[in-house]
Image (spheres, rainbow, N blue to C red):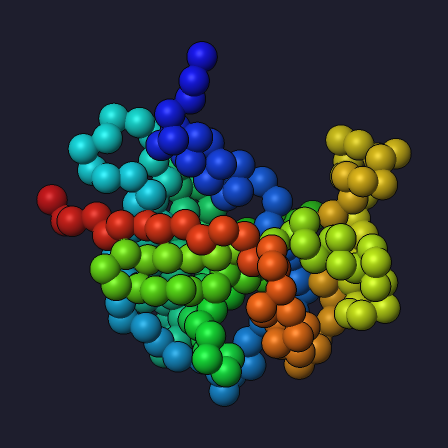
Length: 197
């Protein structure tokens, strides 16, 4: 049985949103890098509005601060809630997403997306956790990190998650050093703006 392209894309996006993102303890931005991009505001979807299949929606609203967004990501499998900060580094634009989840036993981390365009669609790329993990297995002293055991597979070192622990300046150096490396960012995906009803 063949899966159509749209259904496959939706499945991949669901595993991405509710699965593993590259995590960092420190933000990827400095205050001087921040900007506010009004074009991000609104609700975006990975499927057109006439589709009956499930879709992922991203809603950007103003947060409490000049450069802060509230970012809600929703699909049939999960709901994610972030503080988002848009920033520029050299000639590239990024979005740092910091989880708003503050439970007693979970540490909120920063995740990085590269913003390729905002008009007419929102095109994003996620920093690849697989690329980062492989790089740091080969070059463990390149940037500070820890490997966190997967509770479902405690004896499998291949299932460990790499979490970056370097400060922001070193994170930005890492970005600059590898920005053009194949696979450093995942393939881009597009979100289309949803019209208000």
